Length: 295
Image 1 (cartoon, helix red, strand yellow):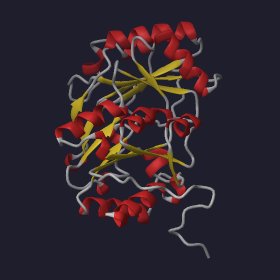
Image 2 (cartoon, rainbow, N blue to C red):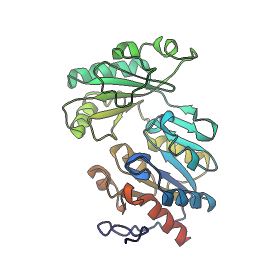
Image 3 (cartoon, rainbow, N blue to C red):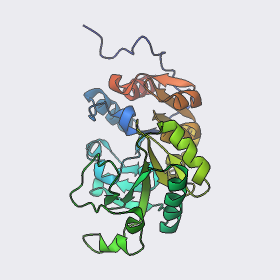
Image 4 (cartoon, one colour):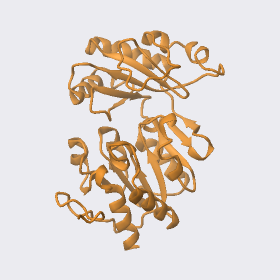
């Protein structure tokens, strides 16, 4: 029988920060969530204990608001989560209502489409709006949505499409443009896209496939988290962050203390000095427990 609280021997013992912790910022997929997309009992208990101790917890994810049910019951106090790689702040206490948006302008998104089609022929696109998701015919429908419109990106990004496709006729800003390539290496695709259109928008990735996530210029997990912390008069030195993929790097380098998961992408491991156990071994909970024990 193994000790469920033990850190796997291949992972160095997590070193907790000496400075006081006022906020924990954690990615979800590959970080807080196990591979089966659940939150373990140990992690649920650690999150609740942190909040009871006066430490705020922010979920900071590439997921859209509609995919936040998995953690909606585990946000205490403020009830806010940062979604779509920083493009939206969502109130999980109020039905996943979006309370802040940093959109990708339609004309910018169209220019990105043109640039990527030229740089990487075969790229297909999807458009993530505040209340809907639509994609091109060639885009892999990994998460089928019966209400999605399947059409060329030019139609999906047209100014009049947002209102005409919405059930209530309300305008829906673009949160993210997604670009998929069937053949390119994921990291090579990201590097190529940044070279071709990095001056237009923010590019990152969190999928194991060649799937890029494209936001408005300057939009990132780090930027939105920094604003949320400033509102609470919390400094970067008082933030502990966790992540595993390239879309977490800016947040991890902004926070005063950061942990890469044992399963993290090589670029994340290179950008951080602290390590914790993998997502399947409750690496976030391991550190939270040590932080609380050291208080």
